[in-house]
Image (cartoon, rainbow, N blue to C red; front, side, top):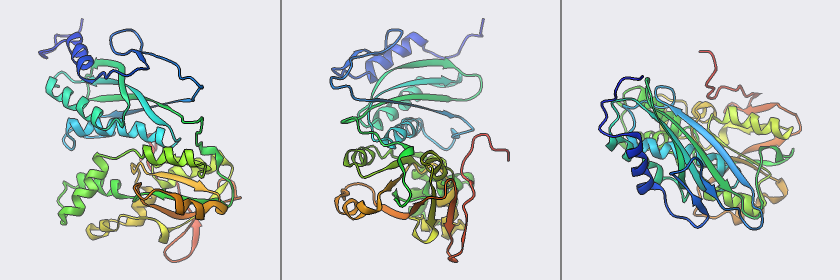
Length: 335
């Protein structure tokens, strides 16, 4: 038998509290937390369901001394919703599996679940699992999204000649991670806070992704979780095309240069931006630019898709063309 836990609560007590506090009522949820599985009513008209899952491990994906439980909850759900955003789905439900060390308090757990709820963008918690961990916190979330009018944007829809766009700013999260690793002692308080916030509290572009899917203007799309240099080849390989991008056109986090960072390098290889990378047919770029809602994050054209399958080219600041190395984040890359 495992040794007794010093906690002042039991698993059943915690499950009841989570059910009462976070399991919202929604018409299509027949049964949420409290049974062996959740039960959801089908949708009339047969919309597609999209399912994704992501895991965050302490000392691999985050360090507890850097992040509050509330922010960890927000980030944990946001990185999952970002996958739904990349396919144009509206978030509907999610499950949470949480493994915690003995020293974890009930207050910490509730602050974590508060963060999940705050950043869930309308998705409802319907279940999960709780476990004891012998080595740090582990979070695994499964998120369920729903298409609208059966319109889904895949990685595989890109065509040679399409224009490539990204939302937001690239490299800000990586700059924030560098600050955290260096003890956050870099001058420039406002830009420092902005970068650290981008890393600890990213926002999934769900409304933007849904609009892109419904507009019919995006041929392919992916969220930038592992860095442009890793994620661009993924849509190129799926679509059977190549790409050429221009360093001068990247929406970089220029402030990182003031503390010794290379804004272009961070934009290309940094990762965890959770912005959307997508392609638009060249013939529809004017319509796209005219109709794209101003309330959404700014979009920037960074290049084009080409017929050279799998070949990714970068035109540098020196205007020389070179192959773009895949130098983004890889969990299993040998260092």
